[in-house]
Image (cartoon, rainbow, N blue to C red; front, side):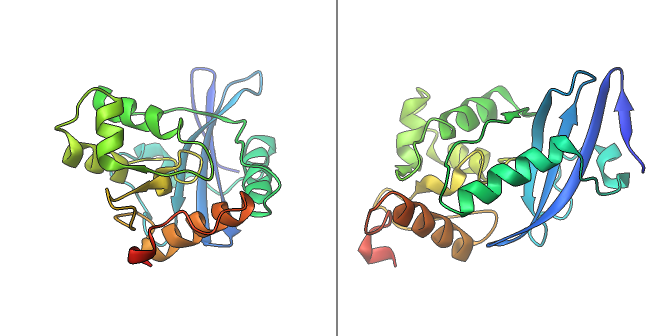
Length: 188
């Protein structure tokens, strides 16, 4: 097995066939087994994200505990058994992107926020387009729920994995939380 290491850190990745398509899961793991998710992408949409560590592209797929734990958490999410992801996320981005991504993690399952609400929540109400750009670069789909961000009117707007997947994820969460729909009826 090929792996990439740096002082005391190992990077691992695997693929998993989810109900919304093949996902690439990338993890950093230190020697004590503490793992952090560094990437969760739809393979057909983000085969090689721009901010990807160059070493990652040469990795072989791995199915060890660090990646298996994330797969198990994703399976529980799609089974409707859990909406909580216990694996920590490790981000690489600008300070603005980090603020936006942290804010996404505060959106509870079964709820949505608009791009303008995210901009307001980080104290940058005029930065709606910049918020949209930061969300589009979210490196950890589903676990950092960018799919819960909708247009001001409650309709579908932008998603790196495609609007059909976004609709699926929102519909899935609506069913799991006993709601009719998380989307405005005008947008469906």
